Length: 452
Image (cartoon, rainbow, N blue to C red; front, side, top):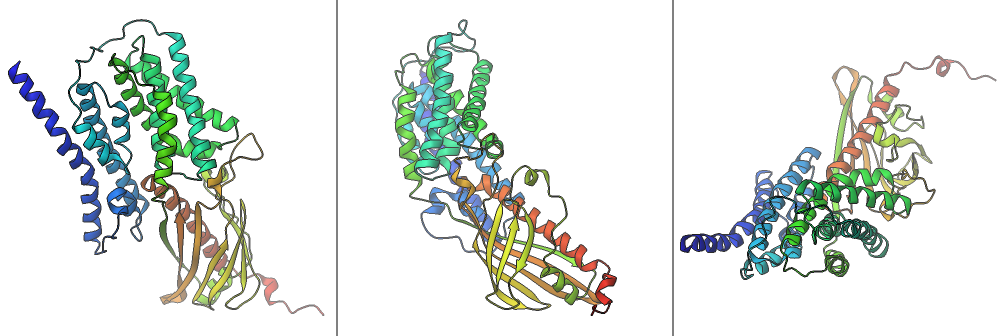
């Protein structure tokens, strides 16, 4: 007993350094990447609170690199959650804290609190379910979880206008926690049964958002991988809390109290991720021919990829009101019209323009004509675009399109790869159209004398 007690004390003492090490590994990884690229690490508190957002802000970061950063972040978060779950098991309390250790802005403070929790009573052995499900508790868990899903979207999106960690991470964590704890508080379900119940609740909660016109299908589909993972983690912690028969917490009430506070706190560190994109193509035509293609008003005929056909914005054509700096350019997209102003007009070399206004980033796929989803407008903005023409040997031309955009969605490592893919896909489609236009044989009508 003495040796077992000593080992337990050593393990409890190891929680704090191990959990902090898992979190700080993200900071170390980001610092190493910046150092290897020869880029100065940004100063300020954002690096310490949200290191992966700092990584996503690296100029020219590829979608693959951003996705790798997200994967590393999930591994780190998984380790912290595992350590915290083990800690609250031995303390017999602090399960909400185990959830909050996954939220970057507050996780270090919560870990410090969990590290000093005194030992609690031994937990009940939960290696197997104790009986048939208690239907009223299961219904309470499912209805409570679905209600929390709708509440989170209303508070975060419609009231605070925030799309970040609170909505995409904390809300599904709390939903899984409420569902699993309520369903297991009297009769313990199996781990697999609890997982299925949590995932079912998450899916039906998403369906409610669709039916209440709070979200569209495509948006729910894009957010679902992250939301389901977080809901599952919350469910694991909720079931563990139910095992601790002395835990008298009321998870639904705590969730309703905590979630708005976390969303408001997150608003103090708003995301404003600048992304630069560059794509090039070699055209078998002289710069003058390529310039005519760039400034033409021909419609882009190439069929876009499936996500764009389902609602993501993609370009259709463009019109120029003049041939000089300051001329207005109208970009026609599948979701509306972009207003632009020419900033560089160098025939045969470069056309650049600033974007004055952008259309919605998507048409929501929904049974309703109007969907109350603010993220479709203003949370992704293209600021500037240029077409650069460089003459090559053999009468060819290298055509390069560059653009800068701003993303206002968190977690940045999750959304940035999708945004970069969409930008690059649209740019490649435009370049392929311009290449085909410039390389097309000239129409014979062009050389016929004008009819008198």
